[in-house]
Image: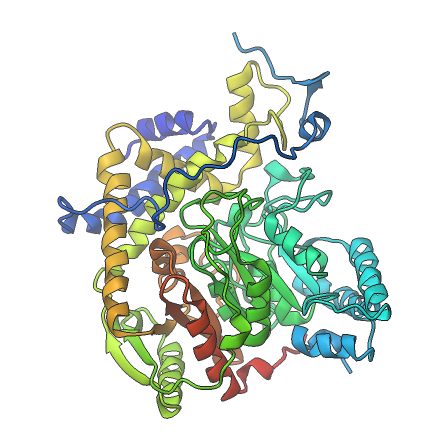
Amino acid sequence: MITEKDVDHVALLGRLELTGEEKEMFTKQLNDILGHFQSLERLDTEKVQPTAHVLPLQNVYREDQVGRHISREDALVNCPDRNENYFKVPRII
Amino acid sequence: MQLFRLTAHELHNLLINKEISAEELNSAVFDRIEAVEDKIAAYTIRTKERAIERARMVDRQIRAGEKISPLAGIPIAVKDNMCTDGIRTTASSKILYNFIPPYSATVVEKLEAAGATVVGKTNLDEFAMGSSTENSAFFPTRNPWDTGRVPGGSSGGSAAAVCAGEAVCALGSDTGGSIRQPASFCGVVGMKPTYGAVSRYGLIAFASSLDQIGPFSRDVTDCALMLEAICGHDPKDSTSADYRVPEYTSSLVDDVRGLKIGVPEEYMAEGISPEVRGAIIKAMSLLESLGAEVDYTTLPHTEYALPTYYLIAPAEASSNLARYDGVRYGFRAVEGEDVIDMFMKSRSRGFGPEVKRRIMLGTYALSAGYYDAYYLKALKVRTLIKEDYDRAFEKFDVLLSPTSPTTAFRFGEKVDDPIQMYLSDICTISVNLAGIPGISLPCGFVDGMPVGLQLMGKHFDEGTLIRVAYTFEQNTNYHKRFPEI
């Protein structure tokens, strides 16, 4: 059972600020959805390996060479606020 | 002659025989967009100048006697979650309403290198999360067969554009059915290739282990041409497979004799509307009469696919969407007291309800104390689902099912009930979990609305899917119908 307190905690982890109405809605919906998903418990998966990825790929490397990359100006052009060559944000500490 | 109704391969012949110019073709498609877009609303942005300019380049090549590629001059729409250099790319989200990428997705680069003209960016459910385009932050797209119904989603704009003659082909992305389900609802061809067959570089990530880009078209031949243009290894996507791309057009063979086609009985059970089931049974009989061996089979873990998918996809999404914080691009709420407050306010105002719901669900499934019970459990069940397919493909070359349990539903019918909305993906999500290819093509009409037939294949065996789909198409006329708008 997910409580409104759990929803508060998860919202903070997900960096979401929810209204009272949203909290109520998500508490109900997460309970409904996860309740629906209880069926997974019926399966014995103790000896089953997890699949995070379907292709047998690992350690994909490339040559350590300088390639083409976007310019600093292009990288900054979409940012909401900047100070010369830096992204500007509200105070951190 | 209504140029906007023709397919890419038909148009290519007109272009190389100099019966039409690429500029005329592109103008004809933009005239069509002008005429019907008020009713359909497929596009978030149109790029007429860029398309016409590129069409003129193709015309110059043709005049100079150069050989042009099969897609040269062909107007193509791109789902608005793929980056286009210098063209706004929003994922139909408020949080990216002003984002202009400084680079193009590999698929867009490949299509443009083949001479295709990008006519615009198409509407989607915000961040590709949804099955109807009702979750777009901007507006819903309407189904060209009945504007009171949804086009499906999340690639609803691409499907509707191709269906309505507002583009000849289009790109979509498919995480749990987002190409195949709208293709089914709009009566066009849509394919999700094998995971890793197409580069995801420049695709705005939703669930990285499931996302795959693929084509929409009005027939199977165009699907094969699009695949040839977009498949292949890309060093910029470390999950793209290093394999030799087959010539898919050589699979355009009208012959299914001896092919073994399995029909998973779980996909024909309750929950599938009787009319849809009827159309699928007719399709089975047709393929059988053409010489295929059709038999029922089983994918016993099918009932677990929905919970598995709706744990894994939101978990990956919650991580992928952490990047939208109002720092480097996109929407920022200005009055944040400190940086965390700014993140929270920006994200809360920038994301819509479905995106928030999935961030919440995914964050919960990954959080301390619940990771094993939900996320890890889902990854293990994913293995069981994949093994179901491995076993079925020991006996069958191709699996066949409906693409969606129903035809296109009405606006508002499911939007307030997330579980009902999630159930419309029930026939398509396992394919993403297993990473195999799937195609949807029209196989009938119920009350004027198209029904989609889904074919599923072995990893990297798109060729056999194309062969079966092409044979079905050559022996039916559903793909020739065009909606009255």
